[in-house]
Length: 154
Image (cartoon, rainbow, N blue to C red; front, side, top):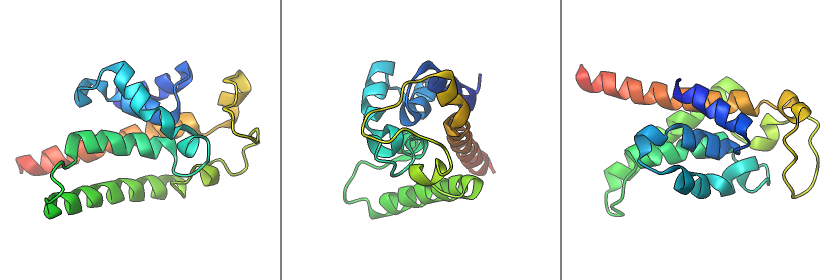
């Protein structure tokens, strides 16, 4: 099963978009499932259901941060390279979907207003683009990592 397929399956299990993407990469991040799920739990629904940056984008950014991030606050080149990596990811996601903003991605979807998450029912899954978005986010991350590996070999 690919990371993209895992992300989609995790979403159908009830994980939010960010959790689905981060958990799909547990084989390469080194995070245990509970830690990864808790770390990414705040980012569902576009950050706590505020419909800001898509949770799939946030989850993918966490994966890229764990695998290709920087930890030295004085490492200006590493910081620049990482930000470019995240911008490249966001650009690819935006090109495929028109936006990285949850509310824009859900435009035209009849969602329940309010602060509480919606119940995960059959109709919930049918009307949302989220399964496709988590699949795509994980697929883009895999493609970026593969391209990076190929360019290192050449």
